[in-house]
Length: 261
Length: 186
Image 1: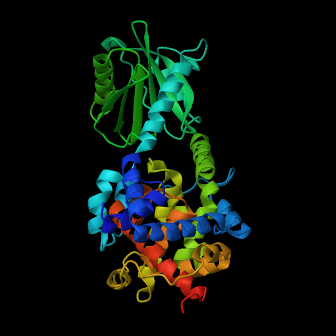
Image 2: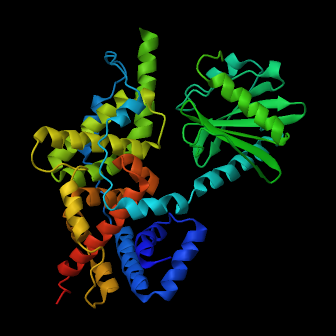
Image 3: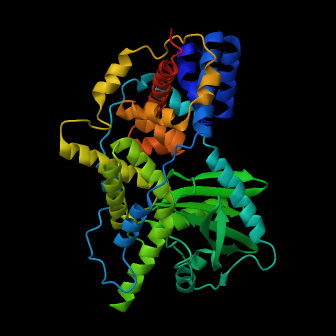
């Protein structure tokens, strides 16, 4: 690590954005370089000053009421329907700033920033799976009918999770459950393969991010996660990895446009 | 139709529950971007109207960065409409100018830590407000709105590497200004 790299990365260290290995590299450099150590000390003090200061501005009460009043009210005439552009096109409209001094930072960023949210969620998903196997915890709504499971989630979540019946393909739908992962409510669709339970957790942002499925094993459970159709999916089970892969592929295939679900 | 009306209210209720808890965060960013309370309030209201309109197609990111991204878009549109003055996020001049400065200026020897701790909130606010737009935005999103680098990158529409360099520069500029504000520069 040289001083130029350290000058960028010490901020990532301060902000808790470095993965453990690179955090150690930066710390090692700080131990041997007095100049960088001095910068780190000063920026730490600044960071602490920000954390200790009360800088958030409370929105004035009249603004809150104005916004409340502009939302559709019970009893009022139905709000005028407007064309809903997709979020993608909406975000696409944002100005993209020029990346001026970012060359060095950009070359560093891909390798060093931590992605431990995925790890946290993987751990929680396994815990939720284990919890669900306790007597009486598996399902809130118990039925093999996808048209009963799907509406059950209405009003409980801000998304409508897809409920896909794979009985014909060897994965029996046995029900649904509301669960909590990383403090957020998520849908769990429960399937059975022989005597094995599969929990399929579905929510809007559950750290899966990439469309390409990833599979791993934690505490003896196989986990597969991927993103599809704007939702994140985490499948957990003690079935064999190949069977979980097959399950994930069947779900993903059923979700693709053009396939009936 | 009664059914539609119920659905509309249900949607409004879900929007309220999801979006209103972030009102202070949105307002705070608006205050730093617009610098004038009345403009900030208008921007926040417009932000919530747009967010409600797009709520059906909202699929993440998390609600707070999503709202902040909309707010930023509203503010930029307002600056574009006004034309001349300041153009947030496109402040290439400011960024280029800052680029000319060395990232690090040797600090005057001072009991810096102690001085920083003594800064009152108003001084910090004033110094942040004096930063050129891209740096001000980055530091507010990080230190006050408490977003991750990835979320800041999404809100500002720039790569994470740019976020990192902007934060590094923002903090360097703040530190220099701090030393001046404290009168610790000989």
